Amino acid sequence: MNQPISSLNLPDSIIGKLANLGFNYCNDLGENVAQRANIPDYGSLKRAPKRCTALELCESESNWKPVTSFIPQLDCLLSKEIASGVVTELCGLPGTGRTQICLHLAVGVAGETVFIHTNNNLSVERLKEIAEKFVPDVGALMQKLLCIEATNFTELRATVQFLKTWLSNNQIRLLIVDSIAWPLKQQPLMERPHLIYRLFQELRILANLHNFAIVVTNDLTTRNTGATSSSFGDSFYHIVNNRILLSRVNNRFCAKTLKSANKNSEVFFKFE
Image (cartoon, rainbow, N blue to C red; front, top):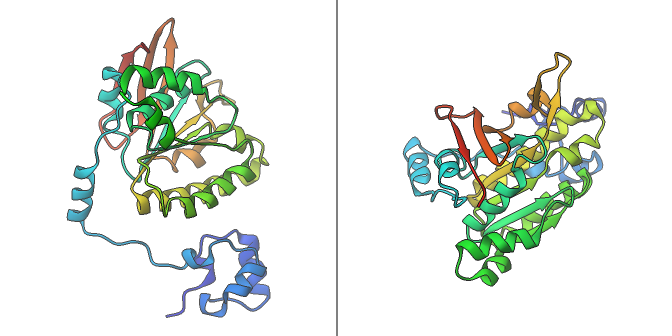
């Protein structure tokens, strides 16, 4: 049976353009036509999803070694949330420990991390300080950690394209985006939901293919009602698997799950 082009994850504008040109089914499209229509990764769009049994899923989850932050109270919460193929969001106001947790996690996986920083907030000195406390060979850890600066959405998308090739020859356990808010807020409001969906669709494919977890940080925004919530509203809420709200009172930090497949929990902790 021919697969309709309308079944693909494409903007309505491109689907309409193809229909006007007489292309209604995937079999009508060749790679040349797809390129002229500006359809990225056309081959992966029409490819059948990866299949596995429930037993294989269970075995894969049981083989995943929990990621540690070296903060026992925080690990009680994060060990249940951060897993292969799963997107975990850390949201909070500035100063609530989002970047600090990301640095701890990068050290906790012995540097097997891609750390994408978008607003010049990556402190290599702080990363080194954390590593010196918890790992014997700081140099080896720093050598394995790939840091990428992506200050706008174009650079972020280019980073994802780069990773598709780079991950073929390199193994990681964790991909961090700190923060997702900065590059997306530069985009037109109406385009954000589609951009978010396409970006995380590609990241999920890579995460499942190469067996790594995804952690992203996000800002809080004030709604018309006066309540605060994670930026980008429902579009982002349905993209992430887990959402953890971070807050701070004096030198005491709090992490609270707002969305999780596990029972919601709340922990208090300090950075040493």
